[in-house]
Image (cartoon, rainbow, N blue to C red; front, side, top):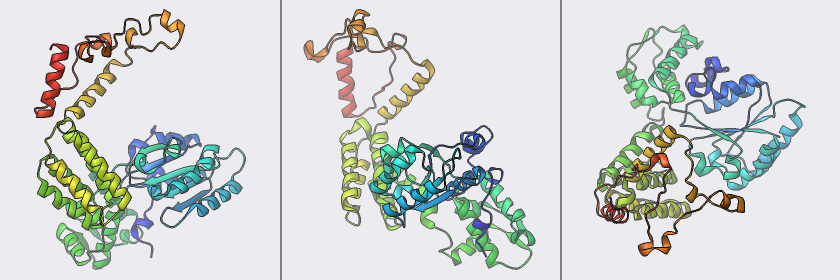
Amino acid sequence: MLPLAERLRPRTLEDYIGQQHLVAEGAVLQRMITSGRISSFILWGPPGVGKTTLAKIVASTLETPFFTLSAVNCGVKEVREVIERAKSSQFFSQQSPILFIDEIHRFSKAQQDSLLAAVETGTITLIGATTENPSFEVIRPLLSRCQVYVLESLGKEDLLQLLHHALERDLVLSERNITVKEYEALLRFSGGDARKLLNILDLVTTANSDAPLVLTDDLIYTCLQQNPLAYDKNGEQHYDIISAFIKSIRGSDPDAAIYWLARMLEGGEDPKFIARRLLISASEDIGLANPNALLMANTAFEVVHKIGMPEGRIPLAEATIYLATSPKSNSAYKAINTALERVKQTGNLPVPLHLRNAPTKLMAELGYSGGYLYPHDYPGNFTLQQYMPNELVGENFWQPCQNPTENRLADYMKNCWKK
């Protein structure tokens, strides 16, 4: 018998649960499917949120040839063979055949390069699925030819809808007298992963064949303790532990940070994922209080990428301790967020004429770059001059935090601008 997750795999958008920002009426994927023409895109999101299912629904709805590849077990040769088969299956005026690549982040540069020409000429429509940030793992030429759509972990309402859907519509479960009395444990262990929820439900109902069956938290706990391999503990704890890791660094607790680092490494977490989180922490939480933190994190990322594991644990530990013991500042993080909000409010304000480039005679005659004061021509390489659009003169986005480095920067700015 097929697993419950496969028996319940949706075949249409009407049966698809979650990701309403992509598939609801008027949303981007729904509009593309309705139009009958789709462009290449990459689905980025955690496991079990419907990436593969969504790709299959798109193909079946458009009635177009559908080819699949997994980065785990194919190379450049297999990619080229699939592209040739796709060419032979394409008919005039028909939507290009769809090539679905699961775990596209695992494709090597050579494998990704082999896709470029086929994607650009429309020989295939590429749909990729990844749990990793595409901007880190997908080569830029391929990424520029694809839209990236972010899928989110399923929320409580989505998971409950899926649970009742399974109990009511599955031919096996619907014949049994199953009542849901408590669902907190089921939701917690599923961790926003639809496949995991259905696998746990499958396990519990198989292990308890007596009727009627009442689903309780105690029953879920008992079944999972007796079957520790029934669900992916690393996947369940992935987001909780990385959150604890980052918050320990932010809270300047090197011992806790190292503990959570060890938990992730022992659990088989991708060391490059950890290194990327260190880069984010160095920028967001330490920032200008210790600019060397970003250099340290970036070096750790490069070293881990070059030497791999198990030796990679050492630069990861070094960077973790360095970041945790560094002074903290989020002034740059807050400054860019404040500025972005102001840009949204004010729109495209004109650049002052004296700041504009004047590469042509006409632009110079129109006053472009006229009156610009070159700071290096003045004592201290500074002179008072307007750099903001007229409407924003006097606004401050950067508010320095209290630490030795930013105190020095703030004093220098006060000395320059006399304020």
